[in-house]
Length: 405
Image (cartoon, rainbow, N blue to C red; front, side, top):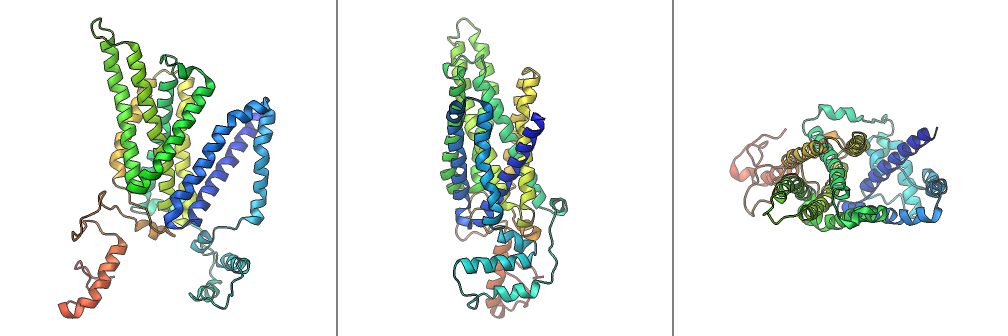
């Protein structure tokens, strides 16, 4: 009975996290999506830091469970207070609900509905007879680019959360004779501090390099930390056995701790950024399904921790080697992803297909890029219309010489 309740509680909590994540992404403008997501991450970090103190005050796990659950009861009021995502309603052609929500917003903001400059309401009136069209995540299978992007990010999420436990076990292992790793509270706050530092580092890195560049940088750091820990430490271990080497086990332990900290730092950023990246490039009509897939991949990566515990850490080295190989594959696959920084969210599956790979480094001024996005092609075709007469080209030609459809 108790295990069933715990399963139901975890299931509901995962649904709450997914829904809140999708709503945050859809409500924010392009320039503020990452900032709002990071603010939510810092609030979650604050709760993680306060949890041991709350547990110490409650003393009994049943009292602690009740204290944690009580705030969630307030979320039942969200059904009446918090509105549905207007972006999702419009994308799924639920125009009747969209009209009611727009009228609700205009009434709350004390706006005059007669001063509808863009003519949104008349257009909605014309489309009210259309039936809602909800899309299943299975439709992604028939796409050309979208399913590849989602699969790449799912593998990144699985690798990031999976290898994070490998680094944690390396640092907390009894064989590592570091005084900080022999106390529960020290271990807990060390891991929480590394996660907080990772979130702080993500803000400037992603702001400067973008989503794809930041993900690539953190994945490279994860791969380097993993490979150095697997290869260099074994080499140091062999030399430390020689009498004239001058190396001791303490040197190996210090290197292991340093590589583990760097690996936990970068792998946490990889997992978090993969979830955010997937939420941005997945169309609105299937954003919940896309987030569900990548969170399921993250959960599968976390499941490797109890699997190792069941086998008494036998095969731990092979476990780490497999994830290290996955990081190398992910580095190559990240180059195939599009860049979603300052881009509008795709609404439907054709919009998601328009996200194509751009060069990792911006092209020089005056140099024509090798890969053009749809928006760039439209801009070039618009430029051609003004020069078509002087150039003597056909009316349907575009700047790159292809006929427009």
